[in-house]
Length: 555
Image (tube, rainbow, N blue to C red; front, top):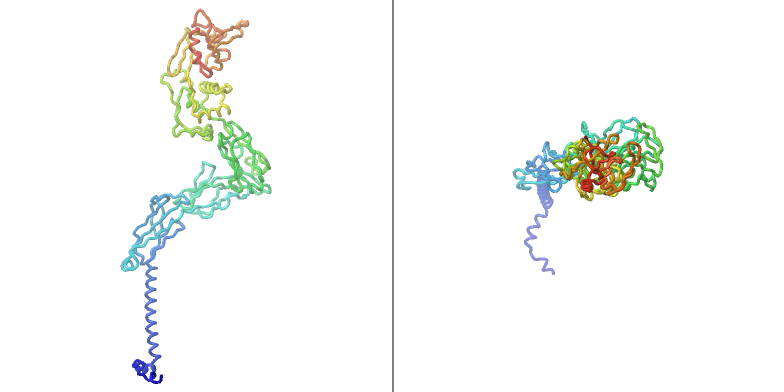
């Protein structure tokens, strides 16, 4: 062991003399290490600075769709592209880094934006020659801050939004009036209004947006009792398929509990809560009966405004008026079903064959045109036709429709007739049998002419009424159609007559009728008001003169 310690170690010989200078050596190392650290920090800082100064940011903007910012060393924008829903390209205007759509966007519409920037010089070599930023965003949507407001009578109604809006439109359903604002505003004044009311309102937050979806806003005067406002307004005229909104100043459950209003007369449809304060009744099927007064009976009374006054009154019933079906639509339906000598074609699409669409068209007829079905229609018939105006032609067609559908024949288009007409239109039912017209000349020699589907079927001598019992001039629809009957009445001298076995009878005006009567001659006044015909002629025309056929008596 002792001999091992005495072995000579040349490395120990070299190092040993340096131990005396140890602190100076460590100092140089620390110095060199410090210099290296600083160099590394500077390099990292330079790299970070280069990244920052060459950076690109793409973010949303309070006025434009988006904003792109390029750092001082970022280079230049090479390409900007945007896409709407389903990848549809969207053109943008670029100004001051702000990106603004060149077409109007819908509020809430999703847009994707890509911006590509090319880097200059060694930045491009070190960091990549280009950089692309991607941003997906939605066009802003403005929401109404308060849907149910308390407004003192006479004060203007202000509608507030959760963000400034550039344009609004408000009014009743289907007839909004647009208003462009002077600068973006968070609150819009509707001006002084009635004590209670409801409007539909839509807004566009940005000038480059279209108006958004409509929403309802209602206001009520201060009151301890719950106040109700209806849309459409109580007392107004509504269509059979018009939804009815009842909005309360307090939640529905607090005002009505679990009960629901009752609609009179009974109308197919359902009630639902549109929101916490609003009940809506949506008619279904054919909706409210045409020509009716529609009542809604509430389970508990509420306060409503009395007419145009600001005073409140309590009631449990409100009502509206449903107009009768229009004469124009009546003629359109009768023409479509071949009950008239005219055809009708709509200017646009045909009315949908659904109960609600046909019921609405009954009070709001579509535009279109009528044309004569036959080129040689008698001028007497043409002179009576007037679209949109009641006439003997229309009355006769209604009577024929009533007779064909086993309804009471009176020529009046009441609720029952309208329901049957709408059902026939939906089913596409048409009349079989064609269109007939009879005209009688009272000038001697008197004649009767039957016209059917564009052809003169027969012209026959006829007898009309004698002096004191003349056959009345005018046009009348046949109201009774009998193969044989007994005719009785009073002669001009006051005596009574009774004639059995009269054949082929078509009554058209009171006791006047087309029928057979045995005479030795025809062509002169001989009857007591009827139009008498030879047996063969009366038998031939009788099948052509069902109920509703028009008979014109002229000089």
